[in-house]
Amino acid sequence: MTTAPTIDAAISRLVREDRGRLLAALIAGLGDFELAEESFSEALESAVVHWARSGLPANPHGWLLRVARRKAIDRIRRRQRFRARQPELERLARLDEEAANAEAPEIPDERLRLIFTCCHPAIDRKSRVALTLRTLGGLSTAEVARAFLDKETTMGQRLSRARGKISRAGIPFAVPGPDQWEERLGSVLAVIYLIFNEGHVASAGATAQRPDLCDEAIYLAKMLNSLCPDEPEILGLASLLLTTHARSGARISPDGMSVALADQDRSRWNREMAAEGLAHLDAAVLMARPGPYQIKAAISALHVSAPGQGATDWTQIVLLYNSLLAHEPTSVVRLNRAVAVGQAGRPDVALEELATLEAELDGYQPFHAARAKFLAETGRAGEARHAYDRAIELSGNSPDRAFLRAQRRRLPP
Amino acid sequence: MQYMALIYSAPNAGPKPGTPEFEAFMKGYFDATETYKKDGVFVAGDALHGTDQSTSLRIRGGKTETMDGPFAETKEVLGGFYIFDCKDLDEALKYAAMIPTAEYGTIEVRPVLSPDDYSN
Image 1 (cartoon, rainbow over the protein chains, first blue to last red):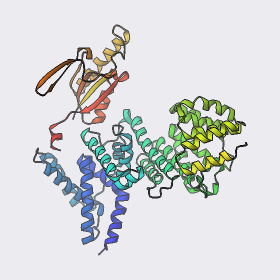
Image 2 (image 1 turned 90 degrees about the vertical axis):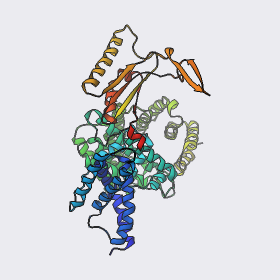
Image 3 (image 1 turned 180 degrees about the vertical axis):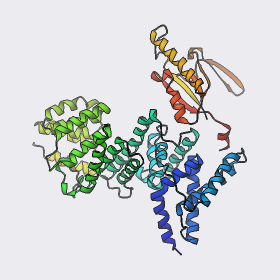
Image 4 (image 1 turned 45 degrees about the horizontal axis):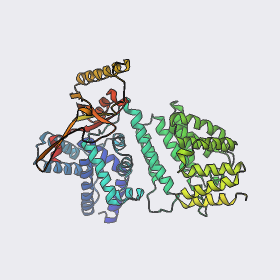
C-alpha cells in the first residue's frame, strides 16, 4: 500500500499538472463553472481521505472526475427543494454511469474553452488574471493571493465573485467565433502578458515567497500554443516571454544593482531558453500574419541575438517600434521608440521626442531615467542630475534605485 | 437566457434630426430590430422620451413624494432598451453591438433574473 506522503505528493502533482484539464472536462459536462469548481474541490478532499486509506486508484483522473460528478449531482439535489431539475439530473446520472463503466475514459481536452472563459472581457481585469492562474495555472488561492500581495480571504472573494458572474451573466464556456476572435484572443494574450510582467517586476524586489509568475506565464503561453497552433500572435507572445526571461539572470548584478541591457553579462543569459524563443518567432513569421506580440518578440530577439555588449542593432529596433506604433499608439511605446533612437546615436532627437511625452509620462520612472541618460550624453549634466533625482524618487525597487544612483554619481560636476 | 440591453447616451450625442446621418441612424435601428426578430432573439425593445419628461416618485414613511426629473443627474442617460433571448452572453453582446447608439454612447448588457436565480 502506498504511504500517505506519497499520496499527498501524487495529489499535489496531479493538481499542478492536470487541474485545468480536469476542471475543463467537468465544466463541459456540467455546463456550470461554479458548480464544477466546488464539486472538484470536494472530490480532491475525498481523494485525500480515500487514497490514503486504499491507495492510489488505477486511474486517478477518472476517479476524480467521477467523484466530482457525484458531488455535483448531490449539490443539484440539495437545490431541488426550490425547483425540479429532473432532466439535468438524468443527464448527469448518465454521464456518471458512462464514466464508471469505461475502463480508462479518454478525458477530452477542453482547456482552450476554459482559457477563453477565464479571460472573458466581461470579467474585470485583475480577476481575469487571478482566475487564469487559479484555474489553468494550478496555483492555490493562497498562492494567487501572494502573487498579488493580497490577503487569501480577499482573493477568495474575488475569485468567487468572478465565478459567480460567469454563471449568472451566462459567460459561455466556448471558443469565440470569427467575429469575436480578435478581441477575445487579445484579452487572453493580455492576461498572460500581465502575469509575466507582474513576475518580471516582482523578481527585482526581494520577495522570495511569491510564486514565479514568469514561469507560470510561459507555461500558459506554451499551453495556449499547443491548443491553438495556427495563431502567430500566440507564438509571438511565447517567443517574447522566452527571450525576455532568458535575459533575467543578468538583469541584476551580484551586488544588487539593475544592469542596462547593453551592459549585461551575456554569459549569464539562458541560451537554451533564448533559442527556444527565437524558434517560436521563426515559426510565427512563416505564417505571414504580423501583429503586436510578434513585433515585440522581434525587438526582444534583436536584443538577445546581439553578438556582444554595445553591438545591438538599434536602428532595426527603431523601425520595429515604428511598426508597433501602428498597432499600439501609446505613450509608453513612443517612449521606448525614443530610447531606441537615442541608443542608435541620436540622443538629441530622442530628447525632442521625450519632450512631447512629458505631460503624459511625468509619473513614470523609465521616462525620467531615459531623459537623464540622454541629457548626460548631450552634456547637460545639471538637468540630468534633476532628472535622475526624479527617477530615483519614482523608482519602486532597490536594484533600480541603486543603478540610477550610480549613474547620477558618474555625472561630471 | 434573457438579457436587457440598456442604451445610454448623452442627450446631445449622435446625429441631429433632419440630417442624412440621422436617417441612416434610424434605419440602423430599424435594421437591427428586423435582424433580432428574424433570428428569434427579440423579446421587447423601445425608445424612451428624454429625461425632461421624467417623473420620479418615492414613498417615505407611507407618504408618496412625486418630483420632476430623473433619479440622478448623469451625463449619459437611459434612452431605450432591448430585451433579447440568447443562449449566452457572447450572443447577447453580438446583438448589442448592432445597436446604432453603441457608436455614440454605451450599451450596458445585463442578464434578466430568472426563477433559477432565486433558488441558487
